[in-house]
Length: 112
Length: 114
Image (cartoon, rainbow over all chains, first blue to last red; front, side):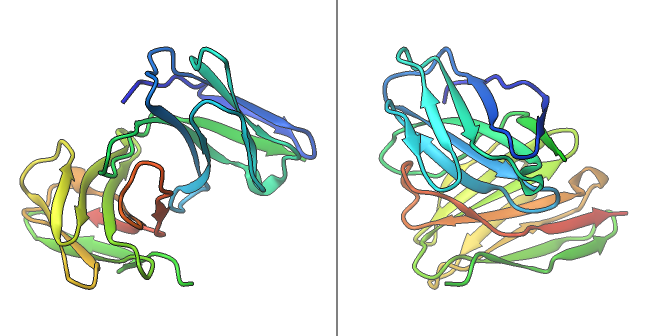
């Protein structure tokens, strides 16, 4: 699976959009981009994933650049409960097998 | 639908002992993965079980082992505990373990080795 690079931390104002970048310059054509987050002392929580197209769900939006070498997770209206470590993960679309390789993630602090 | 459950939630052991942790996946999920989280190494994949067979394995010593039962419940065992085994152990489940599936994590078991 390709390696990802994320900023170690970032602050965000409550109610504003939070834009979390992720670099995956060695991504190959059959690799998906996944985002998970981990709120303190809890298990990671799935947020969103995508292959080529931008994706949106009730939690967030995922914007993948045309060359697929980077992506941005957007939390449209950050709340205090969005304070967490956010992980960007790239996974090969193999036939089977579940193995997530977590990097350091971005520690997001939402401030009132 | 009930989420992934892990027991016990907290555990204290001493060096040299062994420990068994349990994970009950979401109903209908057949893939169960285990992860170890420490402040120094972060979240690391231990192994994955599917249909009672280990399908993927991370880079951990043989002291770490697991199994899966016919009802998809899984256990992991750590023998001859070391201080460095103190960690949060997380279990995750998904339907078939396919890449496009979402993995759902349990709350974890926090193990302290003294």
